[in-house]
Length: 313
Image (tube, rainbow, N blue to C red; front, side):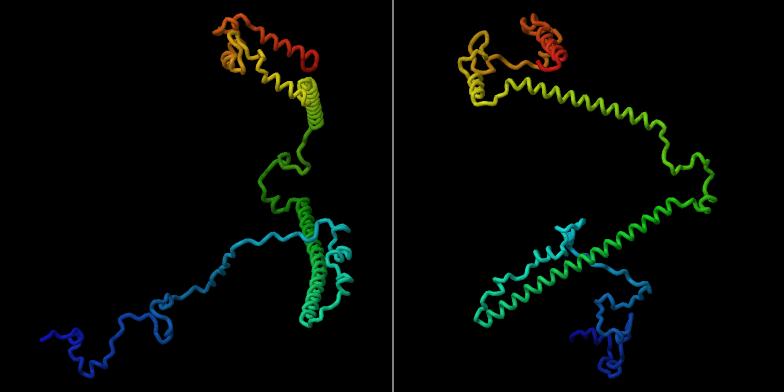
């Protein structure tokens, strides 16, 4: 014999009319379904939550992108050439149809004739709209500028009045005890040495200017002296090239053999060797030990001669 079903075990009198008509009580209830029949249990509004009487803040949605900076139609200073409301500017910007266009033969096709007339009307509307818009924008700009100027002047007058007004009695009676000599003065800072300081600065500026003029004059004289070796013609350029790349030249010849480039004379002199030669130190070459201060003395004598003569040598 098969086992009884679960429904039959839960209610043995399932077949009796009394058991079939008995309602099953609800274990949990939040709100009556008759008031919200369209809200399902999956909705967050299924359970009623009372709200505060304070209104919610208005949320302004973020608009992507930026607006371009408006172009300045009218310049700051209006002249006869830039006044965009003058008859000459309007006539040049929105010229009327030429007599050639007005006297041109009309097309015979009715549809083409209507299209040409429609284009003429649209052009006339554009000219009229541009003229009226320029005049209206100029009028609006003038009113806005006057309003802004009046507001700024009023603010400046109010600021000057507040700056020149005496200290209010409430601030005077409640302020801390401060000596009259320690209070800030409205006359500005005292500067008894102003004239002497200005004269000293003028003298310093004159000395600095004279030094700059002397340096400029010296640089000009140096340029003049060095201009003797400048290559300004093709003949001098050819001579310099021949002298630098002459295979028979002896400028790169050492004690042993004839050379074709500067490397035949040996490696360049290092900084250490230059310092030893200048300080008359011990060098590895006998010629350097015998030379002593010869090269340094010649350079110093040249500089002394330049200082005495006032120019390059």
